[in-house]
Length: 144
Image (cartoon, rainbow, N blue to C red):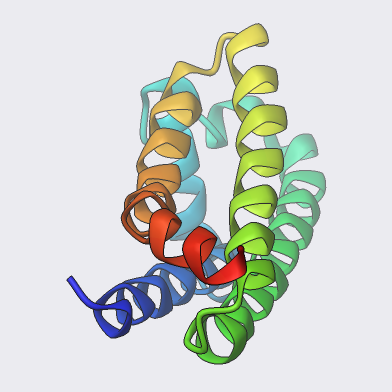
């Protein structure tokens, strides 16, 4: 498949990351439902933590969402610009950024027993791993 195909794939993937990041900002009830399912296996899992925890959780989810949105926008710019031009540093930037996130987030999730988040992370990681694996040889060859 062509670099253009994988560039488009990455554009969709980065838009999904950015959109997922906006979710707790634009729809806290839906985000609570989703995070409850992922973290606790129950749609009411977040609500079950009690009323006193809700403002703090809204802040944490909102800040996490804002960071994910910004990360998605940054990755989108890399996909639209240097990745589309076949620049090795773009490939490395996406791979290292995703790898760093995946290692830290997935390890923390596993250590704390939040296996639903581990599964969600694997899904997000695959959105990026597939095009990165498919384009590695082409980018590496162009770099050397």
